[in-house]
Length: 308
Image (cartoon, rainbow, N blue to C red; front, side, top):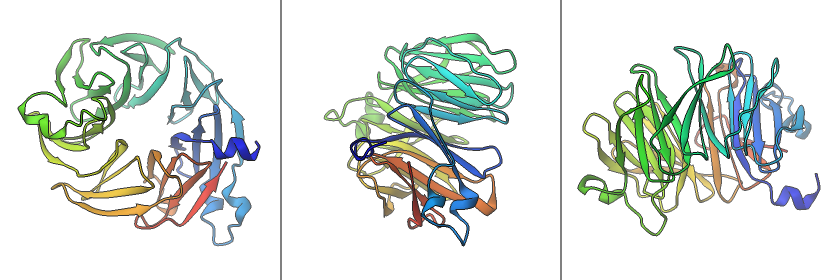
């Protein structure tokens, strides 16, 4: 790949291997690169250790979502899902933006450009149900394991909560109603680009400000004063970590305070991943508008960068 392509590269998705020793990343050119964390984190690491051990073209368009199961690396882009390892499968859904696994029944949950959520039995490869309710395409999904509930956020500004039926248990607009007006930012739109849950709490943001919601009362308890649109946010211990517009990872407290903003290489960030499966390779990685993926061994500063 030439210098012009590297200049215009964006990393859209990441996923760690089940063993935690490898990182897969997908970019806007449809490529997937696999990095060895063992090599990159070694005391004897060199510049070559920060390059992919495997790099291949997976899709004709951007790789918007990556997900690891015990046996497969699943990738999704414009119109297909591919499973790399033992099998390969495709589904005609325009622009698949999000995938999650329901570990209770080993099903794959997919959200994309047809405004619907599709659920596939991973054993048979057959899509067994469709959840309909959003009026525009779906950006993000998350799963509440205790209640076995799916949460979905979309371009329509809605967050929907789904149970064991094809009818949503509840839904709410993050930019309408008295309780959520403080989240609204009409200049950015109403779209929801990131979701995360922790027990009875939910993070969501995008066009609206990143905010912390109490799911039982369906109301925001904290709104974080981050200037740009946030594209991914996670709960980690007593912190909330978020990335989006701007060259930094934001560390926020649950009460709404921004504790720190950690500088990164890309000028804008699309994806944040935590590798907590393997204590030897415990890292945070972030990617965005650059061919480089920043690696944080201590989550308070960048240790080095992997490079496509």
